[in-house]
Length: 207
Image (tube, rainbow, N blue to C red; front, side):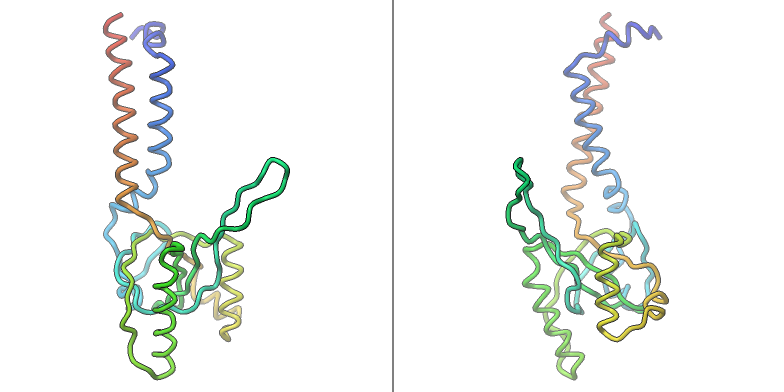
């Protein structure tokens, strides 16, 4: 292979295509791998099925305790000031066989989660089983230190000791992911990279 000839086969437009396709693949590859794994349901987690970072979770959420953290976004202006915080979802506590796991929902789903939370507490106080459910899907991640701090504070307020919280295992959180969008982005990125490679090969062959 003639290296100089190969270098000449690249153009600015081809390099841009490769960068765009590469970024799309890089951003979606992790979630794409998760989406290919067999999904574990929330009921199976409640029954004792073990999940870990990288697990794929999908099913109906039936029992929800209160939220232990919120997420918001803002815009930093050039003068150093920033816009008002915009709500971007909440982190709820879901019961498992061995303790609890976090679930990060979108802001659009907060009202539904709040309703299930209310029904869950009524059930724990001797009321009827929750009738509201929420179909959710996402990937499991290890909690970041700041989020873990709120998680532990919430459990301490519930009456758990630090040692009891440690015995529950590594703090995990299920984050909502649109795996349909992930697959679209991944295969689109793959198509862009393949197109760029095709153009390079064609230019190389013509020279």
